Amino acid sequence: MKMTGAEIIVRLLEQKGIEKVAGIPGAANLHLYHALKESKIKHVLARHEQGAGFMAQGMARTTGRAGVCFTTSGPGATNLLTAIADAKLDSVPIVAITGQVASAAIGTDAFQEIDTYGLTVPITKHNFLVRKPEELLTIIPEAFHIAESGRPGPVVIDIPKDVQQQSCTFEAWPVFKEPGKGRPVTTNEVREIALRINEADRPVILAGGGVNTEESAALIIKLAETNNIPVTYTMRGIGCISPNHRLSLGMIGMHGTRYANALIEEADLLIALGARFDDRATGVSSNFCQNSEIIHIDIDASEINKIKKADYSLNASAEDVLREIIPFIQVNKREQWIDRFSELKSEMPYVSAPEEGEDIFHPLNIIKSVAHHVPEDSIISTDVGQHQMWVAQVWPFKNPRTFISSSGLGTMGFGVPAAIGAALANPRKKVVCFSGDGSILMNIQELVTMSENNLNITVLVFNNQSLGLVRQHQELFFSKNYMATQFEAKPDFPAIARAFGISGMDLTTSANPLDDLMNALEHPGPVLVNVPINTSEKVLPMVRPGAPNKDMIY
Image (cartoon, rainbow, N blue to C red; front, side, top):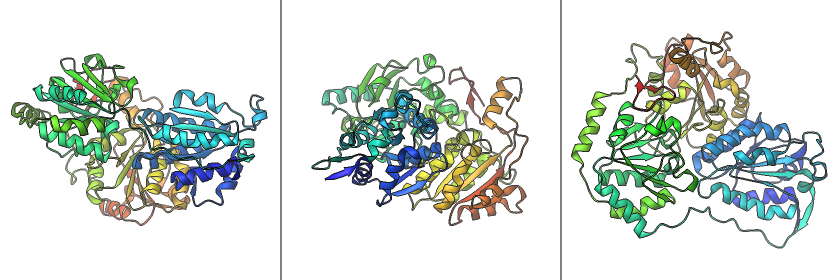
């Protein structure tokens, strides 16, 4: 067989099963787009390369399979960097294929030349600079294997335009390997963990993003119910257990539940599964679980003992460990420990919103109303800010991979393009995007992409005319010095949405706001709703930055 590098890329993507790719063409990847014309792969034209990267993330986060995006060289590649870094911190498998100037021009400061390989080294799981078209036969399958194996992450393939254009001859197509899941665990290792769990008096499970899959979630619930172990989770772990489950403590950390942060400090054993002990979850790490033994199970060896020293650790797939350990777990009622859990929940109730009749525009009431109206398996994306934390606190997530949000990097502008990616990968599911009047402007141009593809997405803009979460920190910790967080201009977001070709609605002027909101959720296609909220509303409870979790403001 004889093909150009560009043709090889497209054919290999087809063999991998890639059906949709987001991207933007440019001078350095036009050969790739020329080859894509003859493919059944659907190309989704983003309006900004960062948007393309987040669309790939939306596909990956909701399916567990690597999402793909294309960009050209120079500014195309640099615009993508934030989305790549975001994927790295949240362990999201994406494969970014970037065009590069011709091989002979590399290092000459040619038009739109940038060292994509060098720039992406610290923010990728791996990256490649392709020198010859025949290398693609090895590199493309290897890139997907790396992205999806072990702890997932982003991989960048930088391909000079002459490599895309050149032809090579080869005899057979390579075989894509199944993603690696880590080393097998031994019976002795599993028995040791089971012994510690069975002998503990006050155990707590901490579930992170590494166990937020259907298989792992079912195993966590089985373990918890068999041994009566309360379960708390990080933001990346949302969906692994229903917040309404009798053993659910809710979310831990800066904006978690008070009783989760309190009970975990009384535990004598913490079972950390696929969690990395980041600062938003632990507060001051030296004060976190000081009186508890720690079992840490993680597929990434670098995370073990990085922040919290484990008394017993296992570098393996948490799902595999859970599957093997459950037969060794004893039935245990743990009546005193469960009574203590119930006591703390009673003493430290989550301070909810006023009754809907008193304040239908309270953000928590809006979120609860939407949650009651959409299907249980709906996918919820958020941008970053107060709205993100409110959704994390009160949405009744019951299924893994249904909450997609920028956790580690905290990227404003994530919500809309990620929702687009989620809708593209899950055409039969309802997608709701919660944004803020600050975040929505970061990637508002992708409303055009949403319109062109007529996606079943409802975008809710919580509008408090400020950078709400930053303003909250200024109010609480910076003597109410509201510097650069109050918006003087008041964009008409529904009008902007209509200009982009999607329906727009403003609850500010609505006679029946709840009815109009429900109608918007049932609208067959993309719609944006402006939701006015009070500027003074805060996300509570919260932990002061730099303080231990036990010292919550509520």
